[in-house]
Amino acid sequence: MCGIVGYVGSKQATPVLINGLKKLEYRGYDSAGVAVLSEDSDEILVRKSKGAIKFLEEKIADEVIKGSVGIGHTRWATHGEPSDLNSHPHTNVSGTIAVVHNGIIENYAKLKAYLQDQGVVFKSQTDTEVIAHLINYFYEKTGEIFKAVLETLHRLEGSYALGVICTKYPDRLIAARKESPLIVGLGNGENFIASDVPPFLEYTRDVYYLEQNELAVLYN
Ligand code: GLU
Image (cartoon, rainbow, N blue to C red):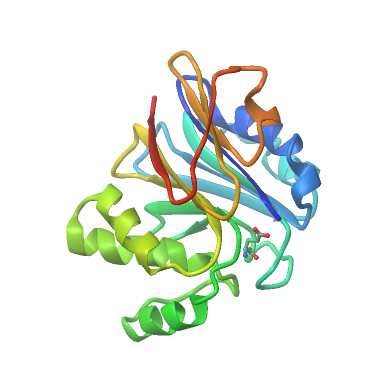
């Protein structure tokens, strides 16, 4: 199990993500992390820490992470020991795409070997990291993030609930699920994703349970 959250709106995303993660901590406490599309630069700010969410909070306490689109994760490790490096979110090599994942990619070793043959250098031991690199691979081929995610999903075997952000698409968050739960919260000028409803109950009661193999694009 793991917990994922995502936010697209006009609030600062980091506090919304951290508060949401706290409500999902029962799903995993090996590590916690957030990735936010920076308001000030064309980059994704990724902050993560091994252990409980409070360690992540301590790490970012003196920092203002400005951005209103982001994803977060609390991990129950299945592939790769609990560590800062194996914590989610994971990114492509240039850091323009970030992914959080709940589930297990059963064919990750084969996908990883293929990507390594293409010159991709991996940073973690997780199954999840292949997703970020594969989205990048197909983004370079198709030039469109939605198509890139779709092509990636077609290659994944196993279970996933995913949240994806990309610097080239700063107005949106892409979500998808197969076997793992993922719920969309529809707010007023803001939208949410989470593995369970508690993270966004204080913002909206309008929820949509993503169907098996369904993909959603949430805009602010
Ligand atoms: N397989 C991923 C990892 O180990 C996600 C873990 C999970 O969802 O339990 O990082």
